[in-house]
Image 1 (cartoon, rainbow, N blue to C red):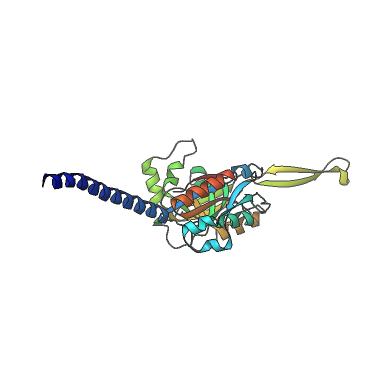
Image 2 (image 1 turned 180 degrees about the vertical axis):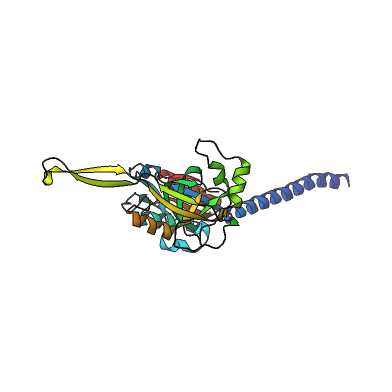
Length: 291
């Protein structure tokens, strides 16, 4: 009997240890599975292209046509190394670049943002902002306050983030108080808004003394483009948004390019998101976590 008790004294700790090890492994596998199912948002921009430089070529991950089906491990196995190059004469993100981005493993959704620098005036208040053209039916904006029914197509209609009003200042450069910001939010449906496109350049031709074709001078001059606008509502977060088609049409009327400056991605799986970020950064893009 004493020998049996001694034997059990050795077996029981080993058995308990095995149970704990199995539980720990199960928890790790469950956590890994949850991470592979989680959705991650990435914001991708090409800062080099904004200064007129092309993005330097680098390794960019591409998937084959079979990557749209199968498990994530199978998709990762089908990834091959390719060369990414900025070819965008049609904008900061060309159709070829968007095609390569769409082929990233785990990509669920992708939004292209048309962006332009603006000066926004509301009565005596103003601020500089980046206006983003998005597909309002598809882009994930959570509306917290509506401006009511608006007649579309008459003037640019904006959706602004809650923090937009905190960035406004008066004619003396003084920021709004919390109370002033709240008043503007309450009056969102009746506010008169004016947008001014920054950096627009007009080409003017004049004839120098002496006349003739040789005497024709070309001069570039900056000309701001004011445009009456209105609000559609207020969304969570920050930013200034309008319908992409409407923005493209508006810029075409002014003879200005409407460029995709930023792309936002929704990627499934932590490893896929990290791999996408590494690949995009290696290709020269700036990548951050989108809110």
